[in-house]
Length: 128
Image 1: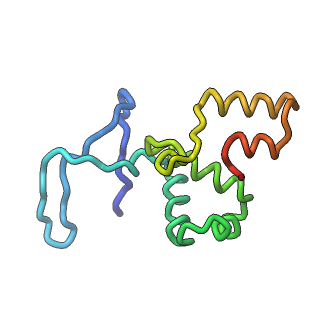
Image 2 (image 1 turned 30 degrees about the horizontal axis):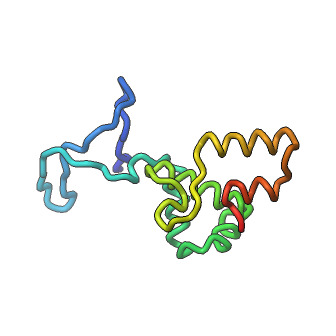
């Protein structure tokens, strides 16, 4: 059985580099320092979400049905993954980007009843 790659140091929680690759067919080994890539930073749950995203061809409505969660929850999880990969949702196409402080304020305003769910969704750029 092949275990998943460990991406964090158990002693200091720092990132780990891959040092050895082995071909399971012929036992050829390659040694060096290799990056595990940006997806290595994702949790197993986030990787499963990404796999579902690919299987559903990026169609969020299909993901909603496949995962049994609401459309806003699908978008929120996708945004979480985009951030885990070091980007901000909407950052490449010129769409508005909300800062973590702005996001926190919107959620606080929603919790305090100062805005309703629709206003919060618009402020978080989860709906038009």
